[in-house]
Length: 318
Image (cartoon, rainbow, N blue to C red; front, top):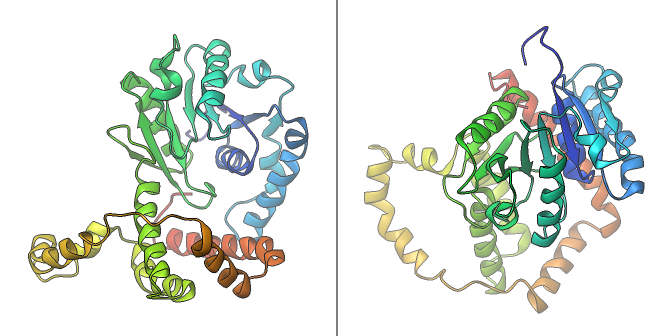
């Protein structure tokens, strides 16, 4: 949205952590935001929670005038009121197909004819809850990473019937509000991020289950090893730089090794029972349950510092 252009309106449906995060993302870039939730208690406290986070971002010099930004965020008394005038809609309901099918029926019926309707679902393909809609062509997944106001990647995953215009519109909106859209070319459960995260988690659980390493040492290997590179490079660029001749040379040198490792990773470890109990006991010995909220604020502060560092090096997302 260019300087001097009129404010655009987004409707945020569902005001949990992700919905609050989306409201911040839109409002800080000058959009008017309308919030709606069937849970009246959650809706009533949403703006105060958003303001609390905006003020923390202001303390960290990641935005100016939190009070002015929150004034662009208003609650709506009904779904119809929330959707009125909105050119973009972001749905944040529970991860249940039947709930999303019913909600998208309402959204499609009540939304402005030109509005794009996107879901924040982290795993469910849009085809499972939009096939029955007259306006299914304008529906897709726009899956954020939590919290979206600090982590800019948004996975855009269209259904087979999503129009090119709707996809382009969603991409344009995400870019305009400072996010980093990536395209999932084919529908697949979990999209890109959670499938990559899941592969790492499966191996982490396997190493723990076989007594190869503690949860703390596995975490250390990622945060003080792989994660340092991954904060500014992806896996393909990483290996491209890790062999003299680039990615082809790396594959020639180490492809056999990873094929051998992969042959031992076919069976998934169940995340339940004694294994989860042991991991939970280890984590709670390192971080008592009552300290979890404090540690989440610590995580967000670290992300803010990382965002400031990346911005100082020319990365303007977020």
